[in-house]
Length: 515
Image (tube, rainbow, N blue to C red; front, side, top):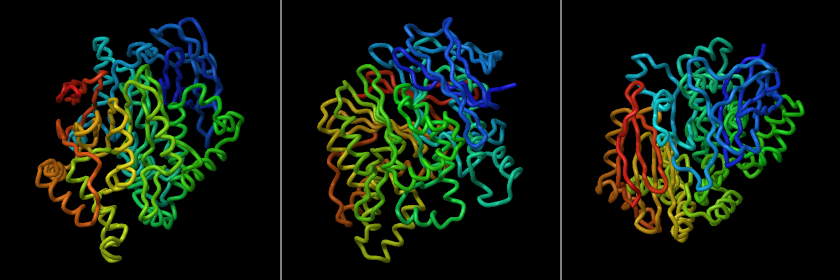
């Protein structure tokens, strides 16, 4: 009998449609019943795993509850949990977004709570059924490191060791292991229910593939010499397409997707592997970035990993095609922009200066010996944010300054949370990280130091010594940093709040209006 493996996950939702994604144990027809109507889709199969995404179309009102059947057998809703519902996008757009990044899927026993803290997303899933209506987010934005392919949980490591003894022993190797990684991440009761009833938009960061993914050209060359890497990157990008990217697309976009058409026709995975291999070798062959109109607000989710141009001396966070797309999306009519960038655009100014300096040295500013040392440093301490791709930082800074409208940049990655504001234009950087993966005490103190003026002076001095020009504007941290696990909400137009948790209790850490 068919059974649900992962899901249902409520993904793309707009004013008259909703998309529900599932993984099933066997090939079957997936039926979603909602408001007296039935919507169906057959599964497609990839490397022995079976998936479907069902579009509920021509909706005219919110759905108070929906059920899922596999070949006519009901498998959802979940016993003991509230109904999964669907709230359509209002004409004025979203009222509240929730967002965050960096969530490890380790157990919730006392030892792992001590080492990893409480899982705020899990606590949020426990809290939401009893919350007032205004606390419900219209969209959950997950900004990267939804899974940790290079640092699996104890349960995932046990699974790996049960099936192979080959390298990499402590990391994910293939699509089968990625499928299990996602299953473990998304099937806890509270998480599963939350993802079934709150729409999600996602983008990857490095740990979805591997730490420091596409940090530099030397990094890519080094990984290309690693025997197991090619198989891993093909599996990682293929799994990302199935588990995360497919649900980011609207029904109309998916209807035109050539890869999905091949998989629905019974390709079985060869087309997915070929697509993923090409996406890694030639990023311009595909676009992971996407945008959504949320009423008068425009959400732009930017791929800051796969689309990088790594040419020494001309590094770009976005290659020419991706940059042209972003320019066009930013300039389209909207009252405000929300840009999802997995890595922060505005770091503490001292860190920004150090990354500017390091990039210049990696390009040979102080000679070949220092260049090699600087590349080692770049990889060792993750000097690979927008500041380390200075030309792209300056291009985007000038573009955003000239818009004359609020720009809210949502990011994660750095494992602490803060708010920064530019001194020119209405540009805000809102960081919420991690959902569950806190920094060590030593790294917390190191990051606190970067907030002080002395660190800003040191970073600026190093950048000037390397001949780096000053940024187009300045900025400062106006809230934070906070280092506990967190999930943030953005109540439009201008209220942001960070939440932490203790056990199942969700409590505000701090909040402010964007002024």
